[in-house]
Length: 189
Image (cartoon, rainbow, N blue to C red):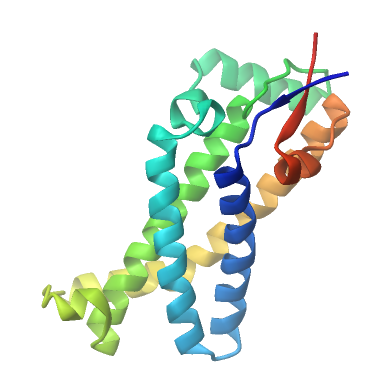
């Protein structure tokens, strides 16, 4: 069986750092460790910012341009999953996997942004406060609502992502979790 290096070291370290830090950030706030939540939030903000940059300048399969497909391919990918038919093999993300990456990154950007605004608006700390960026009561309330509710959406997306990984693993008989550790995927001929 031929293998190809797909996930570079940055993508793999980013992925597992994101898993651990998002989990710890969520747990910290649930148990009232607000300062730990805040610092982990800063870490997540830096992490996601660097990943976005890497999405434009990184290795082939790390680039966002490899996550974009024609609409017909998204539909074909979705139908293959629903019917359990062996779908086309992708070395990088399949169409729905790429869409999930965009959804997760967008959610994390909004979560980070809302956290920074919320710190400035309600806690009088953080970069929004330090830069004296004005936040109206209406905008602050909206941001607060988003920051408190978005993690539930993120948990749903994470669950869908994990389910998608297992479905793809079954359909293609390859260990995608292992590939996110070692960087290699099997190359179908």
